[in-house]
Image 1 (cartoon, rainbow, N blue to C red):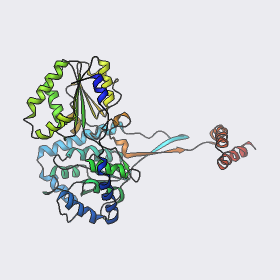
Image 2 (image 1 turned 180 degrees about the horizontal axis):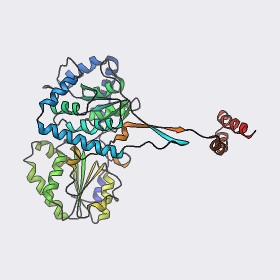
Image 3 (image 1 turned 90 degrees about the vertical axis):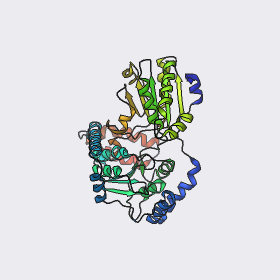
Image 4 (image 1 turned 180 degrees about the vertical axis):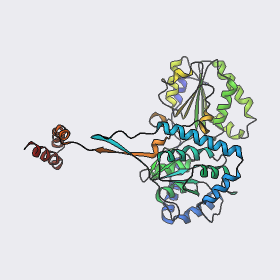
Amino acid sequence: MYTTKTFKDIYATKNDIDWTLLESVQSIIKTVQELGDQALFDYSKKFDSVELTSLKISKNDLKRAYEAIDDDLRESLEAAKENIESYQKSIMWTQSDASELYQKIHPLNRVGIYVPGGTAPLVSTVLMTTVLANVAGVKETVIVTPPQKNGIQKAILAACYIVDADHVYQVGGAQAIAALAYGTETIPKVDKIVGPGNQYVALAKKLVYGDVGIDSIAGPSEIVVVVDESTRADWVAYDLLAQAEHDIQARTFLISEDESKLNEILTEVSNKMTSQPRTTIILESLKNHHYSVLTASKQETVEVVNLIAGEHISIQTTDAESYVDLITTGGALFIGPYSPEAIGDYVAGPSHVLPTGGNARFSNGLSVNDFLRTNSVINLTRKTFNTMAPSGIRLAKEEALKAHHDSLYYRLEEDKQ
């Protein structure tokens, strides 16, 4: 257990990019650029142990998966979709009335969406990304997800059907990011890539940025939970376990002014851990990446939370709502005992694609507005130009840019005649 001071001394925000993978990821990107589809087939065999005959998953395959899943899952996916749509529509940028100076809003043309597979295929990521693109009016959505020996999980394919994805391809890793960024014979080049992934995916997104837009560089998932004497220890224990089960790098933070409550929760975590199927992952995560912090005051608590700038901030205290204005960094705030982080992962409405590793200091969670772009429109009257031009002329002189000066000066002079 740390005090505020000792925690501040040892903790540093980081996104854990594994730079030892740099040469390998660069090679993968270059090979995909050179060989296109053939590189994707080769890498699927090498990394996923899957020999593919086709990259594209047909609309009929998506429909069959949708029809094959149970009614309860189908209804849950549809309900989550509706909640996400409703929330994103409420925060979507709106077009301002035209004047002499305004912005015009346009949806992106084509977006690539990475959906992780592996031991925990993230069905919800299909919804938490593609629905946003659809609300924004993106013209074309391209989903990639790693191939599996027994085929892509039906729930992922069903979710792709529900969101009406334009294209779905079975390809993962850095090679999928390269394919989206530069295009192959089968996979079209996109304007922006969004969605979480492993170290190879994160590093590949970092390397292709500039040739294509990205949402963020996703590191290990994390949660910060603030508790007091009123907190249900068993509920918070499940919240911490839910975060730790993501992967062995997942980070958990437990903060309180009440030492006995911290100990009570940690005891609950130990007791409940053994009933979890992913106990091995949870144990590794908690052993290396859990921090319990005992603070001396609410002010200290807020300082620690803002220092961490965590992906998920859960406040489960009697005065939980009072923290909303005090916490200035964090991907998403979960206020009160009935707003657990897991509800945000699936159905609340805001996207679960959030900044990690302290990046909430300067970035936001994914939203509909990330699928829009704006361009400024300057449509001045003669009167407004005549008012602005003298200042522009003086600045052009200062910068010694004669043509800039003349472009303004001769318009102004002609108007004086």
